[in-house]
Image (cartoon, rainbow, N blue to C red; front, side, top):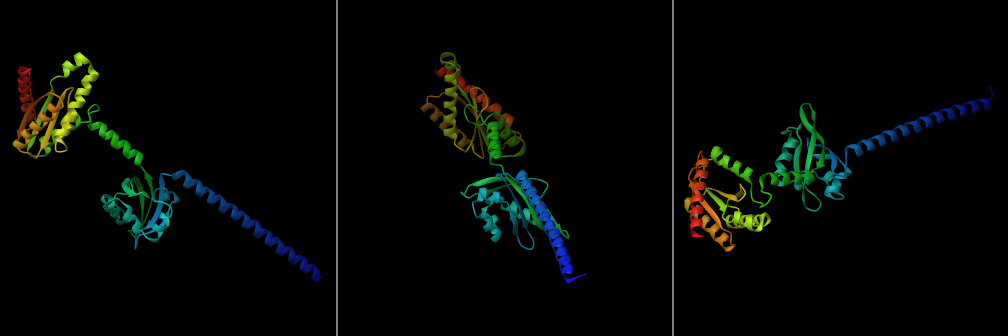
Length: 313
């Protein structure tokens, strides 16, 4: 075999090997691109603008290893870089009331199977609500890392608060309703023992107003009376509408003199607004087991007051 033939064969082998390597490289590159695209598609499926994922070491020191770019939708551009540099950012931005929850999460003193509801300060200084599902990672029985997803639930919280408000408030007057009053009544009767005062109030002119001017005018009268009760009692008492023209004022930790001072304030406020109420008052130094009797006494006194008002007309 000549030298030229040997060279040709060698070059052919080299080209063949090179071609195989190039083919293998291109194939690997195609597989890598496919895996990368699949990863991005997965992240897109599980992560929305309202979500972000994280991975963080918690031992021996707290350190973020990954934060979704979508986290910056809430905390501002560059916030992820700051978090990578200093995990203290998390402790600074969480709501003060939720800091103990954060500590329990990174020390393992929490039920990770349950969602963790918390508030974080966004880039505008406003606290936002998040629901987190965290997965602990252990080594030799010790918690070393956490991974999880947080989802913004501001809309859900607003809806829950709205429903909670509607559950306990009268739609016409914005006072508390019968449901709320019953719960407060039961708590004082069965769970607590403290001084309590009760005022039952009844609109004297509602039937006349409804019959003469119509129910829409009667509704305005009810709202007017409710506004005066709210002004007179402030936040120191529970003012509730428990019937068509019936209101109740429930006070705690007061004495009998304070109760009747409250009666005088309500009468004065309503008189100035030309709202006429019959009011019955009752007081007990100990609410435990006494609330039903207290209500009955206030009810009797209200009807006595109504009879006096009729005689004065």
